[in-house]
Image (cartoon, rainbow, N blue to C red; front, side):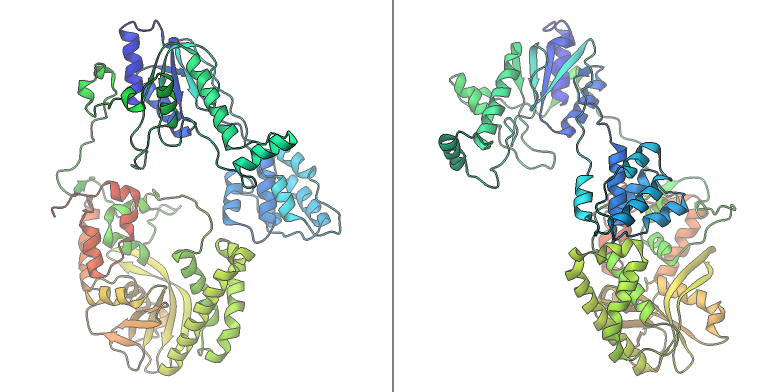
Length: 604
């Protein structure tokens, strides 16, 4: 693209053309090419005419489609988010209540849509009132209604060509004016010609046979190819003097590309070969005859001489409540601070990844579901009978899925297999957990108890998954972890554990500790049902680790918080991921795209 822009400017400078209007630009049908072209040519002050404009959105149809999708329970999480993005119901409690309904008949649906219409803008309201919902007593045809209201693609209006602008043609577009010179880009891979694949019903020879026998011309790959070739002929015919074609060697992901098939066709017409027509373009812009017009890359921003940034202000209290007081930290936030001060700071400033994706049973969703089910099955008091849990788990799972908006997609029939697998894993974990509690004579002291305290001079709050009371009076803080125990044991043995000890400190200052009762902390790894604890405890299966499980982490956090108060921030290095992995610490904070961009190159 930079080559084409520089070439166009050179044509204007040496008088090859009298104005930019005499130059055409032929691009593949790919939005990425169009975006690049607009940006690169703008750097040289060159205007482009005929670029596709922004598509118009049919917001009424879009809103109707999303409302129907949300009313059909279980509602996909992305549909609810998309509806919020349209500014519908963000602050209207009554509308949110209406969207929680699940109409069963056409009459109920019509009534619900009319009620929703009174809370939305006029155009959307009219679409809702005009929606045919089917017979009053008949079940709602959700699939049909949702499919019928799915917004279609809106044709893009081309941007009007301005005076002095290059003419932009795309691969699937007939030329809209004549030019003297054409710069054709992207002649590689499956471009020029781009044709559809074989049809799902007929083979090419069957299409030919149908046309021969029945006179019915069905669209096929051969016809599509002929159409693409004819369009390319018309595009080239709109050029009066010269055509320059560029063939990229690799795509944007770095994969090697083959030259476009059209090059062989052009070479055949000229009585030569594609190899004789092409020549490599040097990677060194300095030898281009028009190099002075190549946009220069921006100068790199100044980077610190070492891994330390001096920001000259207290960074430890940036996240404030509405009343102006500093928000407390959570154990998980301090865990992030241990690994990456930059990732922690971005979180404090609200600069976090807000991307959305399709619903999926990933580690976070699975862990959230397992936590909710175990909380329901193990309320305060004596542990349940292990034999009763096989029947209780599915009931608790259904309740957890219904109660949590982010989990409701699991109620859909498409997730039945995954639900069965999770239910099986949960049953195994719950039964074993009940057996462990009975073996030790432990009772459940509290669950999801809100705790507060202080750590490293900062406020602290959080919820411990469960508090156990052992026969000797010890209060044991247990935090559920969905993975295996191997890495957690390694981390605790190296002294880099954080979360459980922070919960333990908050318990020691809480009435739940019941005076002078000892407090111990640990984790239950749900994947292998191993409980790992610190401190001295009596009885199996809570085998304690005879080590200072958090000494190194405490020392590191004390040092880091002191630096933050002085405005110093230490960047992560390229060797940090291995460093933390060797300690058993999950360095998830380093996955942040901004943190990765500022990794310091450590000496290997």
